[in-house]
Length: 52
Image (tube, rainbow, N blue to C red):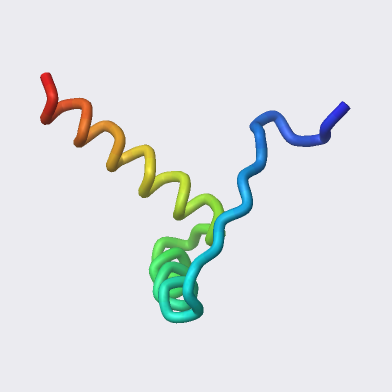
């Protein structure tokens, strides 16, 4: 049984993008993973709102 509640997904990022995202995450006091998930969830909500 996996120790993770959610499926994992490997993501390849350019070094520049990873550094940028890590800096943004640090400003918000979040982990890089948490920041990416939060940003994707916000984008999903915006896209769903636009299509309705």
